[in-house]
Length: 291
Image (tube, rainbow, N blue to C red; front, side, top):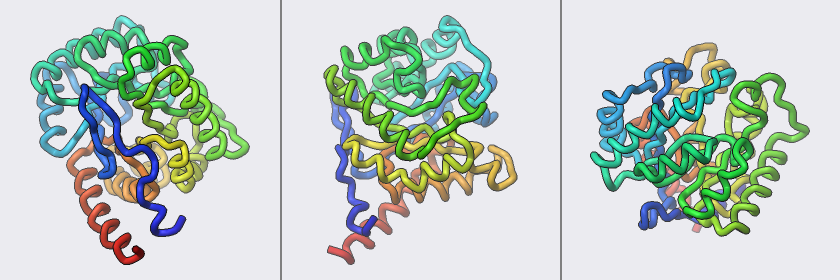
């Protein structure tokens, strides 16, 4: 793409809790894991630690906090709906009471969990299955018209990395997302965000092919979310661990911003905010030379 093409031409705002959030400057979604088995051990929180972690993310620059009670790492154990509710809802209620202006996202593929979370104070839904694992999810999204992260995943958390196969991963991911985006729009949902699902049913090479073609998703006309923070596509290639993958994460964040990411979903909010600040300064100067 040419230099001028880096200007956001997709819809660059969403409406959340009755106010518009402008995404012409990329925003950060902080990760709040309420699971005992998330792949990055330092991201695991309890009810007691969640408010402190949430406050830190806000102070460091997070616009959204994504609360999850079901680990979606490859091969993760099944979690019952009741357990997912027990893990997430008390924390969402506490966060909502402590930080009433915060945009809280519920990270779930279950419409029943999402609905209870919205009633408890969440204001958006992040569904890693893009509505594939619960037929009622789209009905809920349309009826509430809350921001919805439509993610691509091949398979389920239990089997998605067994043997993911594509003829062209970038083309197939985009086509799948476009079809489901059209369905949502036909149902009246106007606050959709697209996530190509790095690591969700993709091999290492497929993840990097998807990254190289991330900007193709901009033609869908909606904000783009990227979630690569400390994932295996980084630490496996570098022969290290999730705990030592911050530098690699920042490198990929920079590339994703260059290709049009509107929201970065991250473990390390402060570092992501610094990345956005530096990229934004560079981008403004670079574009001004080509006007």
